[in-house]
Each structure stands twice: as structure tokens, then as C-alpha cells.
Image (cartoon, rainbow, N blue to C red; front, top):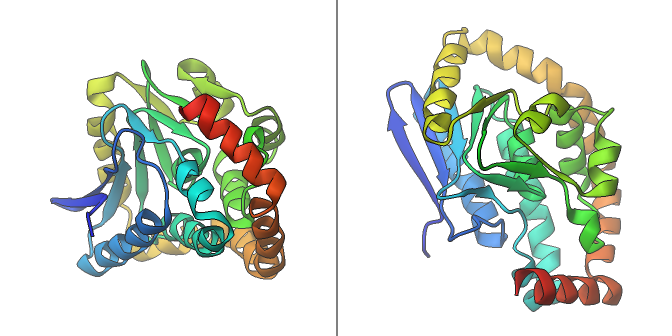
Length: 252
């Protein structure tokens, strides 16, 4: 199987790079690989992690071509794997900083939100939640991660409008913590990760767990029932038609 996620050890840091073609999309195999890679990183014991993409894209989110071609059987496997991958980032006990090197759209925005800090490409980086434009709701895990990372106040606007935001606007809305020039995004993310790595690991992990606890509790309580409803909607004939239209007209 071709690896789509690469890990590089750099001193006390692990740099985890999404590398799956031009868009770094999320599909069944890449989601499972992300979980596996983060398990390996945790075992190796770096003090912090930087998550980034390759080329001009952080991640364009779910690979809708795979959803369209795989149908209901694929959706039934993929959605739990997607939630597991997002939660693997969100629940990682050490600092995780997103070097948002390019666009972070839909599931890519959730990946960024799952990180503790986000450095956004000031010249070429839009962040937005576009799933409803395709007629698809996010799984509960994704919504709770967005609620934690971007805030409950802005989430309805992001979800309902599907707008994408760049540069100073993304910073103002809280979708990024800092902006950096294109060639400085990764370096600045490493600097932030190294700063967070100075915090005693046990104290950081405990504080992170405290901050995330309400979101994890809601996911644990409601995920089973909500995931079943989301799977039904993603697998419906209406959604299949909407995905096909989007793939044909937008993705080409």
C-alpha cells in the first residue's frame, strides 16, 4: 500500500506530513494510516507534533470521488474511520501545531481545528466548512472538534454558509492563531511546537484533557446514534445525486 502520510523526527518534534496527491484528501486508507502513524509517534515519545500538508494544500477534506464510486458499503467503513482519525489528532496528549500550508477545506478544516495551535499561510490559505453545500452533515466527532477549536459562536455561520476565509479574515474569526508568509509557515509552526514542548508533558496532557473533556463526553454519549443518522444520510439516493453533481461540476 502506498504511504500517504510521512513522519520525520526533528529533535523533540515529529513532523507529520499529509502527502496524497494535489489535494491531500481524506479517504478510508489515509484515515486509517493517520491513526496508525499517530500511534507510532506516541510510542516514539516526541515532546510535540507539527501536522502539515504537501504542496499548495493542507487538506481538501473528504475524497468525494471515493464516496461516489464506493456507495453505501464504502460510506459504512469510511465514516467511522474518519471520526477515528480526527479524534486521534484531537486526543493526542502532546502539543499538536498545524502548519496550514494551503487551503484547509471541510474535513481539512476539522483536522486543523483538532490541533492546539494553527499557523496559516497568509498568501494562499482558505479555511472553511463546505460539507452542507454538498448536502452532507458532518459526523458528531467532527462537529465537536470544530466547536472546541473554532468556537461555538462562529460555528453556525461556518457550517450553514459554507464560506471559506483567508488571511486576516481567518485570523479575525479565530480559524487561525497566526499568519505567516508561505515559506515561513512550517518554521513558525515548529517554533510554536517547541515552545509548547517546554511545558512538562504530564501537566500539558492533563490540562489538554480538561479542556477537551466536555467535547469528548458529548461524543461518547451521542456518537453511536448520531453516526447512524449521518451514515443513512450519506448513503441516501439524494446524497448520491448531490455528490455526483458536485464531483461532475466542481471537481471535474
